[in-house]
Every structure is written in structure tokens, then in C-alpha cells.
Image 1 (spheres, rainbow, N blue to C red):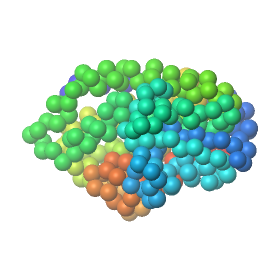
Image 2: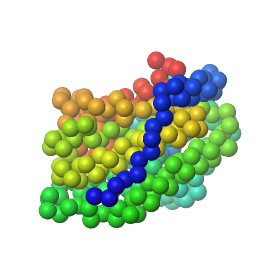
Image 3: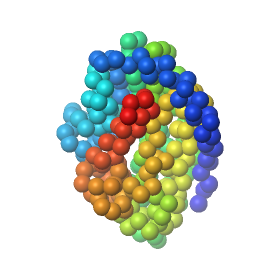
Image 4: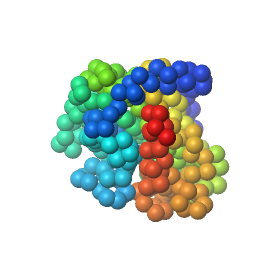
Length: 278
């Protein structure tokens, strides 16, 4: 298996400094403030009732839950399949780049993006349910994936910089992808992946997490990190209500390998905590 380059996470002290730096921005949030939600399907909420429009957006995704809790004016432009390019400059599904929704008076922006850049979910979909003999992940274009991984830190950083250029007063919260692969993922039958495919995809998910944490700390962004709390809440968690993310079969809500309604509630709670609202 081709080795996936990993990004070393920064320590707790630097993350604490990040929170302190952002507190001045957090204090400016008032009821009715403009809040823009950006990102891919993990932000949008496909399969979680009630679905709004054609981008997989749910009325109960984490953005809507945060807006409801803080009485903010939400503009949600997250969309299934979005990449960092779709946020910064590339239209998607006939819609303008997501960043066009960010205005000078925007006071809060949340972002979950990058998984599609490195083909994380697409690779998981492609290999789910395949036999051991197919060697699915070994037959992926791993060189292209590794190249995309190497580019993602700069793309994610540029995305945040573009947001700050358009909304210099805004608090920016990076919301990580929930953890799909627990420590014992090889024994999680709900994933429906071979042991080798599981190891490869779990490493890719960890790499995505590492990039998020590194970029967040380097740029002094707030971070809502559901990945680090995801152990015990993966596709094989029992009872089903403890699952923040689905395996290859939808447990209660959402779609395959994406957050459940409970997962979005947890992501919202973490965004609120990052903003100093418990």
C-alpha cells in the first residue's frame, strides 16, 4: 500500500492560544448577525430530515442548529460534492462559488471542506462491499490521491484567507470531518470493507484530520473537532443512537459514511463550545 503523507498535529498549548486570539471576534456575535455556512456534504446534511433544495442541505445540519441556538441569520451554501475550489472560485450545480455568500458584514463563517479534494468519501464509496480479492484501495489512483493530499494544506489555508479578506470581522470556525473509522475499525462489520481497505481509508481520514488541525492552529482559527471525540460513536456504536456517522448501511438518518442526525447535533454543540457558548 502506498504510504499516505501525514501532517503532524500541533500541541494543546498552541490550540489554547488560538482560542484566546479568537475570543475578541466571538464577543462580537449578536442575535441577527449574518452567519454563512460553507462546505461539502458533511456540512450540508444529506439524508437528514428535512431536506432543503438539491444540494443535500438539511434543516437540521449543524449550521441550522447553531443559527437556531444563537438566533443568527443563516445563509447556508454548503453542497454535496463541494471542494475547496467550489468555495473559492469554481461554480457548482449552476450556483456561484460559495464564497460569494460571504459579505463584509458576515460575523460568523463555518467551514467543512477538503474530503472531496483528496477523494476520501469517493474512495470509501468505491471500495465498500468489495471482496478482499479485489484489492480495491490498492487499485485506486493513489499517486493522484497523494498529490491532492500534498496540495490540501495550501488550498485550505487559501480558503480561510479568502474568507477573511471578504469578512475581516468574522469569527471563522473550521469544523472537522467526524471520525468514520474507529481504532478497531477492522472489526467493524458495518463498514463493509476489507481489512486492507479499512487501514488505507482510516489513514486517509486521519490525514484529513491532521491537515485541519495544523491549518487551524497555524492560522489561529477556531476549531470544532468532532473527530477527536468520535471514538465510541462510529458506525458500530451500540446503541444506534450513539452513532454520529453511518457505515455502508444507514442506521437511522443521513446517508452512507456521512453524519447522522445525532452527529450533526454533536457538531453543532462543538461549534457552540468553540464560540464560548455552552
